[in-house]
Image (cartoon, rainbow, N blue to C red; front, side, top):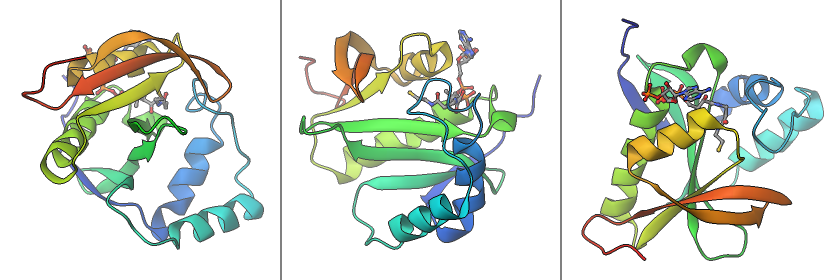
Length: 166
Ligand SMILES: CC(C)(COP(=O)(O)OP(=O)(O)OC[C@H]1O[C@@H](n2cnc3c(N)ncnc32)[C@H](O)[C@@H]1OP(=O)(O)O)[C@@H](O)C(=O)NCCC(=O)NCCS
């Protein structure tokens, strides 16, 4: 049985840039995402500028497993739909130990406790079985297909606990 690490979240910070660069330049990590980005100086400068923006009540959190950053989870607007989406990305060595599910659960708890939104959405490239499984374990329900990020995606929804679905 693989070791089940302690999973904690904290805000993403400048020290996480090497991890972000290594994930987004890894074709396996980006197989079902918006495309590989080279880990070059231009991209590092973009990330520096991005992390310099004021922190709001949504955004990106680093996922730590036993105190080591292994990826991120995020809350971001889904395009111009007015809906708030959950997303996550972990480095390959962290896969398969339940880390994304536990990190996602913590971020969902944060949303229900701190934000005034009735539901969360997530969009997944068809074929991303691991991600769809994470969403199912978190209680998300598949609601259909929609075009986002210029392609057809599977859309999942999780309603605030106690609210009727719909
Ligand atoms: C998707 C991702 C975050 C999952 O992280 P993780 O920590 O391995 O996820 P968990 O261990 O919490 O759960 C994964 C589940 O998917 C299952 N799974 C993994 N690969 C699978 C596959 N190819 N087919 C079916 N199920 C699969 C696992 O068995 C597990 O389910 P189980 O607990 O019922 O056994 C990670 O693979 C990743 O970062 N991928 C690249 C980025 C990405 O695709 N992000 C999501 C974009 S929508």
